[in-house]
Image 1 (cartoon, rainbow, N blue to C red):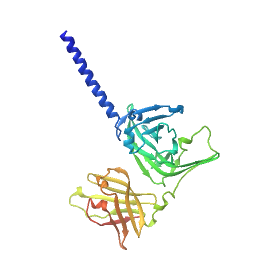
Image 2: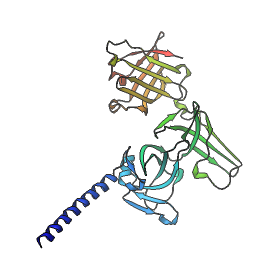
Image 3: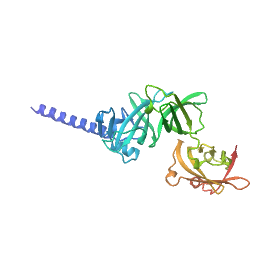
Image 4: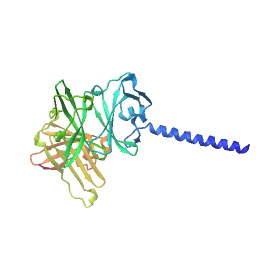
Length: 333
């Protein structure tokens, strides 16, 4: 009799620990972040509405995804899943933000996010995200990087009629072998860009074209006199660990800031604006390396100007590293 009671207590204790472990796993599964592994994005849903209203779509309600995307929307449509061409293990899942369970519209009428995922065994690892603004479409496109075929994602506006259709590309993004997204210049040579999947149908239009919109953000176009590669001139230190290479690469399509040295590498996309013969610079987007904590204090990269003899750079961001107040630039054409 005593042995039976002991066995019963052991069973209760084992069941209790199993339950605790299950609840812990469930709780962890609800928290989404870059680098997390999952079987399906719906793992992070609080409620799943399969095939709601009989229109063949899956809707989910998720506080975790809402928090991750920093949006007020709590409801999402799982709209599209695609493999990325020219990769073996990269794909994406598209989620459209909707207002409620009764909202079943998707496509360019909604803000959408692409969750870039890398295959990891039987699961997926979340590598990056890309926002598709309301009113815009997207499509995969193919381009060359050296002699290597690459695939990226183009964001633009699609115009369709009964005979002629066109896709005007506003932004281009490359996808690395591990799934990280980087902004590409609009001058990137594209050799194929099919229509967005949202518009695919059984028959093809009589005419389809795609082109980049060079006039996009034309108010931000800067004078060609600034184009070039600039190196910050610095004295060599006795300690090699203090040496750093700092460059600004300015073209008609982008302004790239890059710093490399001992235990530091940063590559950012900047924006530029001309005011009174100065080029004002500010942080726009992380491209590679590490994202400095200094960006929480300032995103002001200052201004560069020509004093008649040399180019000078005043940069509140760099001042956190050097406190020089002014930096001499060596311009390379």
